[in-house]
Length: 212
Image (cartoon, rainbow, N blue to C red; front, top):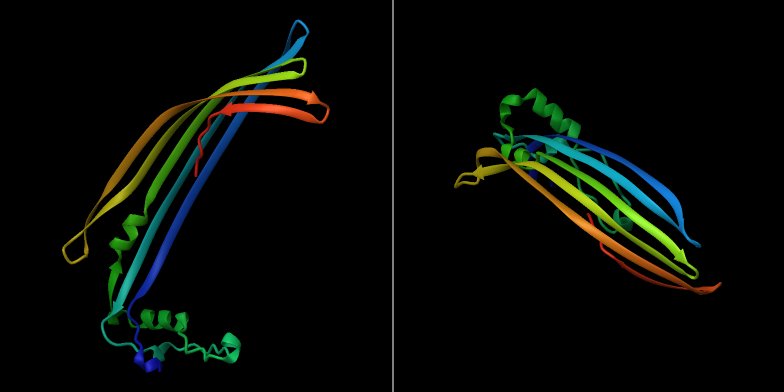
């Protein structure tokens, strides 16, 4: 029965998100030999600059009186809902609700919803600079590879702290900045020994960091 239901709130949301990722890398490899042993020495650098911002604004309005669902009915009908075993009930038409709101603005109260808007605003940046050196050399059937990678990470975050009053309503907001930086060193060693043309034994030790 559409007359048993009423419009409780009307919300308009403007959600704008910007994201930027800039990545660059360079590597130089130089072969060399020590006696009858051949190897290569490699140096590389990689930089990553990422930034993501979000600006979220919500306008919320509540009707001052009772607006039954029957005022905004949609003509949509689905006789095959759950293979016809259930009757799909009446639905509302958003365009009718919007038209009524625009034609009767005095029948609604509200405006900017700070409680839902400010917590969703943020500005997050992360910069990672990494450099590595790696040496590879062969001794007959034995191949050794050693290296080290250094990563420097810098994070900059900005959000909002929203304070509510005793009734759960918006009281105030203030920016909440946070910064963090750290450097990691990741050594690695790898040895490969070829037993025959079909079999290679390999032992590896390495360290790394997993990022979400």
